[in-house]
Structure formats: structure tokens, C-alpha cells
Image 1 (cartoon, rainbow, N blue to C red):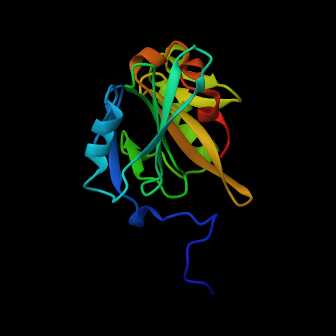
Image 2 (cartoon, rainbow, N blue to C red):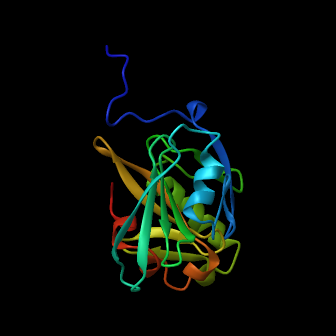
Length: 183
């Protein structure tokens, strides 16, 4: 057997950082509205190369987007025209484990997490809580999250995308199309 990391290997929860979701505020040390240099500073104590960011083409909402990536933590950041953090995607294979209401959201079986969101919506107003985005990914309006998916070999695992409150009216058009693709 090989002792090195494989392309489809999934980091166990015991090897991941543990972060909490603060709906519409942020995830772990990151806050929506931060500038790229503030994100870099917040992650600087955690990894050697906290962020690489580049400008992207105009997105559907006509905003020039800056995309940041922190491969060391398995994070992708999306900034708007004013270069303020407006979306955070967590890699299913190696990203930090993010908890909401005590439930782990990263690297899970999509159907199990979808059922949790459906059950959670049942104790709230279902039509104002649960929504489906893009290609049928479940989302929670009260948590500010869309549960995207990512490949791990022949399996799909959850890759959540966290959003601020202003994204909840049209989450898919709030970020560039690449944020919603299966990775």
C-alpha cells in the first residue's frame, strides 16, 4: 500500500479542522464582506500559503468576480466587484468540517444531508426554508447554504457553498457558474 495522499482520498473528520457556521455572518474565522487581504490574514496562522486569488470574467450578475483559493485548507472564495467576500465553498475531500446545529455538512452523503434539511424545514415554514438550486442541490434559507456535490472516485460527497443573507433571493446568480459545478 502507498502512504501518500491519493487524488480521491477523503480526509477523515478527525483530521479536519472544526469550524462553526454562523448563518449569514461567516464560517470559522471568515466573515462575509472581508477583503482578500483580510481573508489572507485570518487564514495566515493556519497555513503557509493562505490564499491565491485571481480576477474572473464577468458573471451573470455582471459583477467582476475575484476568486480566491486556499488549497491547504480546501477552500474557495468568491469576491464581488467591490472585492468583498460573498461566497465560501468547502472542499468535500479535505476542507474543514463545518457544523450547523451540531450536524457536519462537509464530505457527507448528499441524500442524508438533504433529508436533514427537509426534516429541518418541517419544523419551520417549509416554503421559506427549503429550496433547490441549479441542478437540484438542496439549500437552507435560514442557514445560508447550498449543498453542492463533489466527486470522490465513483461517489459524490457534499461540498457546501455558504452565502450571506443578500444571496438568498437568487443564490445561483449571486456567484459565478463555476461555483455550482460538480468538482
